[in-house]
Amino acid sequence: MNVEFGTDGWRTTVDEFTEPRIRAVGQAVADYLRSAGEDAPVAVGYDPRAGSRAAAEELARVLCANGFDALVADRDTPTPVVAWTVLDRGLSGALQVTASHNPPTYNGIKFVPSDGAPALPAVTDRLAAALAPPDPLAEDRWGSVREADFVEPYLEDALSVVDSDLDGLALAHDAMHGSGRGVTDELLSRAGASVTRLRGERDPEFGGSPPEPTAEHLGALETAVVEGDAALGVANDGDADRLAVVTPGRGVVDPNWVLAALYDYLLETGAGDVVRTVSTTALVDRIAEANGHAAHETAVGFKWVAEAMADSGALVGGEESGGFGVGGHLRNKDGVLVALLVAAAHAAEPLDDRLDRLRAEFGDIVQDRRSVDCPDDRKAAVIEALDADLPESVAGSGVERVGRTDGFKLFLTDGSWLLVRPSGTEPKLRVYAEADSEARVEDLLSAGVALLEPLV
Image (cartoon, rainbow, N blue to C red):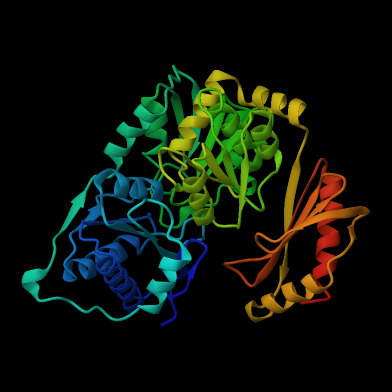
């Protein structure tokens, strides 16, 4: 059965997102939970896509027929809210129907284990191997299915976790028609902010563009902040596990800088390490070192960030695509709570000023990436060929050392770096670079692409 669990669950086109496959995922999860000795209820959530609620109901029926009580969200709900509910209620786990930031022609399912963190490959590999049609128990052993409000308890807890009084701060929130609408904006409002709401209506088509909070999709939010009255803007993706930030001085802020500002703010009242993926900025390493802490590097995928957060007790973990998780709250991406934290950081020190201070103290960073088309069955061979002939210099700077956490990361003598790794979701190789200027980043990316193209 063609169901593959990638870096963040199973995601596919809607024509492949069929009832037999949905049921098979539900059965695999039920079998896994039973084998793990789990017998508490299971949460089932969903995003606002056209088929998501129906898929969630199908999953709930399969779980019920396997003896599990299923709690189905009473509305489309952010993934972090569903994951937090698992922790809050001591549940066996959760299934979330979502394709996150992908266009409406996609859908998918995420499995969240009982610790609220993303499922690791040891779990998803077992699920993929156990896919099978539903195998119901005798009806007198079935569980129950009922609706539940996941949002209100989450909002109450978030307000108790973040010590903030936004006291009339003018904010703008772009829900991108996703499940963060009425959740992130409501949290900010309850914290005292005056919130302008953009794209806050449910639209299964997301207004005709992917619900991905990147600069090309956030023009209205940027206008509301840069030309309007909002002091700060925040945006969520389709399932609200990611966050984008807009300031008057910078427009859409590079997520690497958001992580740096978030970590800097949390260090004002707390102490601890930071976790980042291999493709995320080394700026947070400098901030950590200056404060007597450490930065931990992981492979791409928030599941690895979550694992390292558990091992290190880190204050925060993040990735360059805008996924951030906060220690002591939820070892998972949470674009809702982090929106409140970023607003609190801004209330304490205007975010543009904070970023200027960090730049003056720790230096500038610029980051970008490119993609090189590569069939999935060629990726391993290309990486192997690159390993056999790694360059001694790149774009005029010597290679100081090589990291192999995920692909190859070439640390250069001028303090910049170049990363090459296979995409976990597309038939592409990714090339990332970080340096202190856009021109230098472009030179590094061009050099990286030139390394790969003859090998593909």
